[in-house]
Length: 176
Image (cartoon, rainbow, N blue to C red; front, top):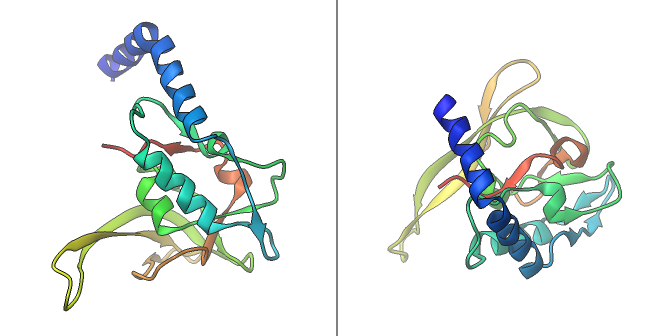
């Protein structure tokens, strides 16, 4: 642990200005933070905007894996009463542990449980596809204490977090 803290301190002292420039380059290149658009009642940030923005971050050329951005640095809103969609892309790209212990809800504001961890599995392309691909889902604990797993469905905005709960959480980069 002492070695890690020393390394972080040395990196920040030696590379701080360079890292700040890389983070600014990333934010400027992608025009972050992106102004959010919402739908429905309660107001949920559009999953299409979230997935597009997160994918752009993941594919940005020259982005430093040392540059960390919170959800609030990526998405811009003046409201704290919004909900943030828990999509497969968000689960895939957010660093491991970002959502651990957070309550999540249905779009109807019904608490489903507490996010426990990300789960990945490999799925084949089916009869005509040769390639397999990774699917990202999650496990959670129900309010009654039972450990459950979300099925392999496409999540889009079936489940949401309260924006106020995640806005200061690190959203980028995903662990290598």
